[in-house]
Image 1 (cartoon, rainbow, N blue to C red):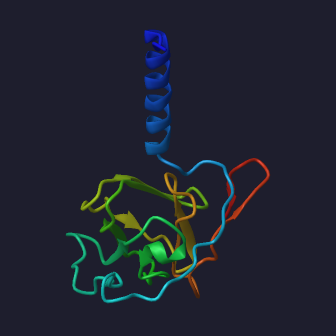
Image 2 (image 1 turned 180 degrees about the vertical axis):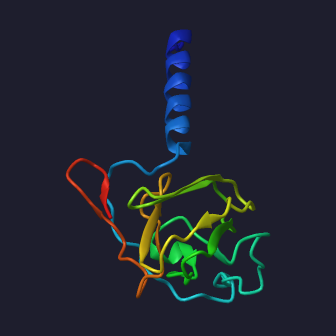
Length: 161
């Protein structure tokens, strides 16, 4: 039996749409389950927070972005900075990030893989939590007693910080 050309075209369109959908960036709604920590193995060494990575010119503290999920995405987390110091974020991950303070006091702008953010001023020694607008499960803190808990999904499909 000979297949109609329209059938092949329809199948090709369906496959192309499915492939584009699968390659799309996540981050919106959906079900969230906290990442399970795994021990590093010889094949997958743990990322080394860069005490050796110098802060960019003008920044007193550098926070390294080392992953795209959870409170383990930043090192150090929490970061320590006193009032009047500046903080910069070095993207050691392989994807774009965009960090904002949970209270809206600052916005890093987009930080490409391998790039460092503009420096952000620390107005006080009080704790300040932040997250990635692209990967909303990425959470960090400046001057916190500990890293913030991973966020929980809310009924509107977003996250509560």
